[in-house]
Image (cartoon, rainbow, N blue to C red; front, top):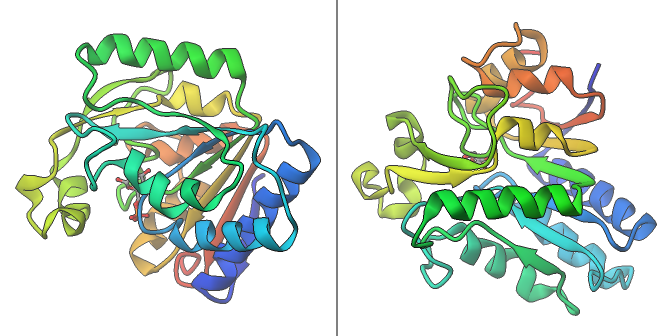
Length: 241
Ligand code: GLP
């Protein structure tokens, strides 16, 4: 069974997740981490930067991988996930960890996915931190993604493009229709997995992921098959448990 940590507020949830990551980094300075974007982890990154300063933690030997990227957006694009990570985490860490990310502007996206899959396998990921979409997606593995999927190019659902439109001037059609993402099998290879969810909009997906049938129609349900999962929830996201 997964560990489920329910916090009283978004801030408390963010702090709990950040503390847990910091403890792992302190124990293993060469930590290999796969990290999510989205609105949910913003508080966690803020707290992680604070803890890093307070405890003089060093990221110099760590390595960070990003879970996904929009197809067509490069690191210079302010809406890219690569830029997000720079703004919210990396530029606040000194020394900064090594970073690898899927290049949304790669000339050959399939080759880029193969390169990334190899890099992940070579390094071995200690901890994968995930958010969860309202439809239960993890990374950009939308409903229907095969459980044996690897890093690849995917088509986003209309629902996900609507949910992410706020980052694109509110226009779902401005959200890139495709993305690159690590696969479900790739995620499951992480030694440990954290999932963060906040707010009542996530409550149905969280409840189904934890207690519902393990089925590709709700990608996060596959986490029931992993032995080391911790959910970090606020009260609203935990409401239907
Ligand atoms: C995004 C990302 C996911 C993220 C999810 C939830 O599209 N690809 O990695 O977990 O959707 O985002 P948010 O935290 O903003 O709700």
